[in-house]
Every structure is written in C-alpha cells, then in structure tokens.
Image 1 (cartoon, rainbow, N blue to C red):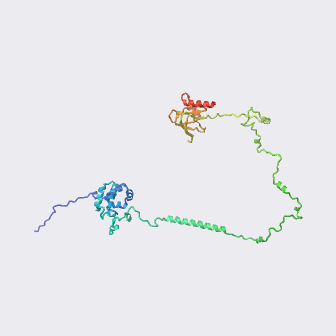
Image 2 (cartoon, rainbow, N blue to C red):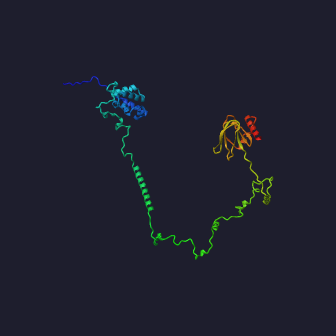
Length: 397
C-alpha cells in the first residue's frame, strides 16, 4: 500500500488587511493639500514668494531636474514649506528621500548651473518650464485667430457699411440732380437783346409840342420843403387818457396835503367841486417786531418752516437780530439758552432757558413768545440790565 504523505508548512504568512486611510502620504500630496486649504494657486504662490510656478510644481512633484541651479533647491523647498506653515527641515528631508536629491558641494559638478548636453529637458516629467506643457491646468490654451470674432459683429459691420454706402449714394444723387439745368419749351421766339441800344431816343429836354412843356416846374426849394416837417407856432397838446389826466393828486389819494398848507386858488376851487371822500382808516394792527437779544456769547440758528437756514452765527453780547415776518413762524435753536432773550416791540421776554442748556424748536411768533415766556426781570440778570440801559441812553441821545 502506497501511502501518501502531506507536508504542512510550519508557519503561515500573516496577511494584514489595510484600512481606507492606510496609504502612503507623499510630500507633494501634503503640500498640495495645504495650498488648497489656503486657497492659493501656483501663480498666487509665485507672486507672493517670488519663486517660479514651475519650481513650485517641481517641489510638489519631487522633481529636482526642473531647477536651473541645484544649489538653490534647498532654499526653495524650505521657503515653500514655511509659506505652507510646515517644518522646513522635515519637508526638505522628505523631498530628498522621494526625489533622491543629495546636497552637493558648491564647487562640485552637480551644483553647477550648466546642464550636460546629453540631457533632454523635454523628456522630464515637467520639462524645464512648466508653462511650456500643453496640459498645464493653469495656463489657458492658445486661441485660434478667428475665435474672438462673433457672427453678430460681422453682421453689424456689414449693416453699417451698407448704411454708410446708401447715405453716400443718396447724397451724390441729390447733388447731381441739383446741378442739372432744365429748359422748358415756350412758343415765343427769343430776341437778341444785344442789338438794342438802351440809350436810343433818350433825351433830358422836353419837346415844345409836349403838353408838359407849358406846365410850371417846381423849384428845388419847393421840393425840399415838401419832405421837410412843417413847423408849428403853438404846440398842440392832446390828453392821452382824459379820466387819468383830470385827476388832481392834491385832493384825491394818499398825497392829500394837510390843512397847514394852503393849496393854490385854482386847485382849491377844483377841490371844492369834487365830492368829499372818507379818510383812510387802518383796520389791522401792525405786526409786532420780534428781535433776538444776546447778553452773553451764544450760538443761534434760525430756520424757516421749510427747513431753510435764515440766520446762523455766534452772537456776541449786545447783538440783535430782527426775525423776518413769514406766514409760518421761524424756529430757533440756541446753544446757550440763558444768554438769549426776546424783544417784542421793545419789551424783553425770557430768557430762553437755563444756563448751559441747548434749546430747540422755539417758535418765533409774538403770540407764542408772549404766552410762553414772562417779561424779563432786569434785577436777576446784570448783563441784560446793562444792555437795556445802554440802549435807552443811546435812544435818548
């Protein structure tokens, strides 16, 4: 009996399952992620770090062959890592491990910027210049020559050319028609006028057989007198409007003289013949005058009912301002209420308010002021008493 033997392996290989996040993170992936988090493109990094975008892309792709001078690679990688808030030394170490780049001595051939002639830059992953690649995502493709020309623009240009041509042809046609000379046929035979002597038979003398020869011819003086205006011995005056011209201003109207002046006899007789007129009566009382009186420095602003500024200044002690009379009373705003009083027909009212208080929306009408404010007490404000006494002295003089 042939027996079959089976040989079992002594140890089995341990197979570990990888998770969804178990993958190798390269330096370029980390840098691109940080740059995307900052919302920066390669051109933005180039503008801010003053490093070519081709070099930035070569750092992310771990391609040292894209640099012109290998001696600058370490500085570029560290500067870009600081820009992304990464550790510069760790980033440069990862770049050297992934790309196989080694720091060379400054005098060595590897650190030279002169490239060997046998190296084809186009065969590198990115080439010498990343912008020369047609698949670069941040460089727009070259447009065709006629790609920017729209059919609607061509149609508009054709219509404009046709319109200009039509206007030009129409103007040229009108000019040709205007310059044409047309002859209308007539039945009368033209006469040669050049053969007629215009002075034939003309004479300045009158024939004796002419009836006008026996008539008396006017003299030169008579002809001059004919066109000269005739002088009058006495001027003739004609009233333009009889009712107005017959009015006597000395007896009718507001210019009637007082009894102290005796009119001429002729005027008095004419006035006696006219009916007596009733005297003029004033039925409405005069509008009281409202003034602003400042006893101390104070800023004031007077506005009309529609908001127009009538008066605005800093009134000094003794300054007065007459408020104009309008249909709607003006409004007062004063910065120092205790220094401002009102004078209504010479009687002082106030003050506007307490000292150091700003008062607004005060209606400057005589009725409102006399009802709102009391007559000013001169014994309570020495400055007001001084100004009032000075005004009375000036008025007496």
